[in-house]
Amino acid sequence: MTEFTEIWTYLARDPLLWLTLTLAAYGIGDMTFKASGRRPLINPVLIAVSILAVLLRLTGTSYATYFEGAQFVHFMLGPATVALAVPLYANLGNIRRSALPMLGALIAGSLTAMTSAVLIARAFGVGDDVLLALLPKSATAPVALGVSDAIGGSPSLTAVLVITTGITGAIICTPLLNAMRITDWRARGFAVGVASHGIGTARAFQVNETAGAFAGIGMGLNALLTALIAPILAPWLIGS
Image (cartoon, rainbow, N blue to C red; front, side):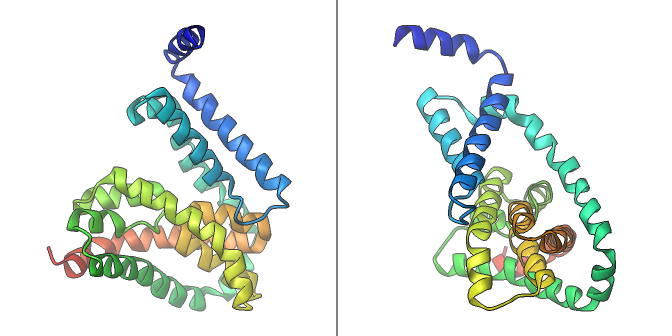
């Protein structure tokens, strides 16, 4: 045990340790997901987060220390989002033909995502600071953190809520949409992208490329709309 502690103390000095462990945790999650036959409940992000949470707890490592090493993954969120332009371009014809329905769905979905979460939480007596962090939880992480900070919420709490929203959406989207007998891949993908941003979009791509493309545009448009209207809705919904 003493030898293990000494080895860990030595390794912990290297910031690349947590980047390596993050990639390894996701690799384990992805292998488990594939071994399960790609079941929605076996979500690779959820598995990776669980593994890393246990490791941080067992080693007594602070989030700041972890992020110092793993921030490259956070940086790659930007290029990964931009890379969604490739399947979007491939489905440009479908997107143009669906522009009007998408606009209606975007407004309805974005407003529902923000107002329903805040009003339900408020009904249960949740404090204003948490409500402000909850408001942008369906936008992609970089936008949600910026919005949360701008309206007086906690970006750290918003990050947790964003990840939770994405994982929940990725798990329930396929069974729910199947149960509702929605077979149009454009509608399925767009709904998932608006509701559960990048993690939901990744799940949509696993199911169908067209769904993934529409999830990507749903995620991007919802991020833009959230950034525009969340500061306007915040005083009205929260009453501050």
